[in-house]
Image 1 (cartoon, chains in turn green, yellow):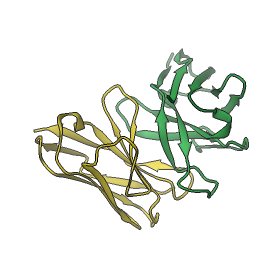
Image 2 (image 1 turned 90 degrees about the vertical axis):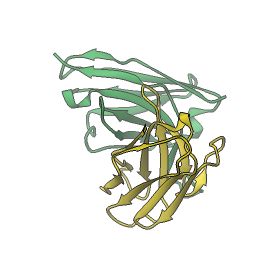
Image 3 (image 1 turned 180 degrees about the vertical axis):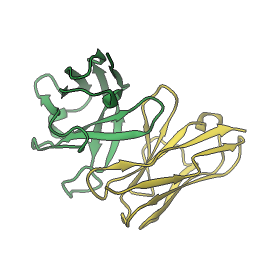
Length: 123
Length: 107
């Protein structure tokens, strides 16, 4: 059974840092596309970052240069290092397994999601 | 970025009703369109991918259609567990973007 369990959220001051973790089971993180998607309180969904099985990484413009996605293969865990945090980064952060429709080499949809971890940026 | 606009933003319906939610893209996205259901306090759940393919385990009362810029999600006969918020998402170009959501409420 596929499971994703996030951790690491909490309250942080503006300008601070936080590292989120997403422990996966039932599949191999390093063989899949993996993404982070966030949802501000009462708002919609926003894709944040993706890591490809080959290691390439991509980011939304809103977090580029501040956030870093990575993985630990032997721990089967995905990470999101968040630096220079702003109030507008306050959200529930979900990790999600990312799938492609075909062999195009690009991810298309999120088929499994974790339960989310809340990040609050406030003084 | 491609903008996704859903309509309506909210909808009241009764158990047994047939419901249609629309998603419009700001440019053609072929069939690169996915639908999710989210209940309060829970993670989104994939319903439909590639515009019309039903995700494994999702009831057949859910269906998707469309291509280009206009897409629909249809629930053929609403069940109590279907009251939730629904999001469309495009994967035609990066960044992948979501619609603002359609909240489906009990009448």
